[in-house]
Image (cartoon, rainbow, N blue to C red; front, side, top):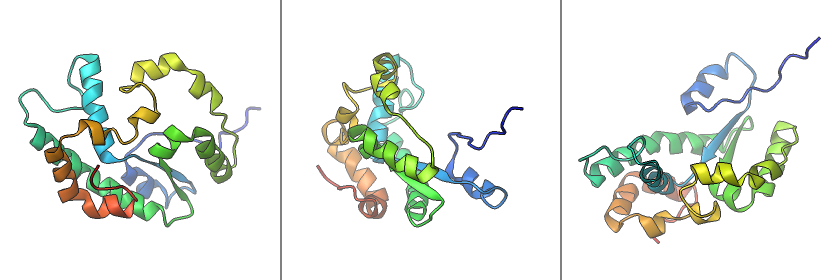
Length: 173
């Protein structure tokens, strides 16, 4: 007989876990990345693919896009701040994953009680090239400092200052 699955992984909005948690015993992983880097990466990904999917719509002013992006990020960052206080919720910082993948895998192995080997992912250069918008994962960390205008960063700081500081992000380059 085939063993019943004990793990289920899905990329979902944070509210889904809050809905499911009272019904099923489960753990959650929250992926945290500086929203300014996410914004820059979204725009670069659209440029790489040659069509708009994540970045500003044609004719949309950058400030309008950035403001909406920051406002959408606010609730998620607040939820991640709460997750840091809960034993059945674990926050994976993108920055640590990009710079120290073995360390993150060791943390996940302890938290989930499984064995994750990062080597296959680290060795898959074709997958990285297809999805990456920077030369390396390390180059994607803090790229907002190089690629985000001062005005766009001001919008992020205006809307997300408290959350960015609470999560250990600097406000200015």
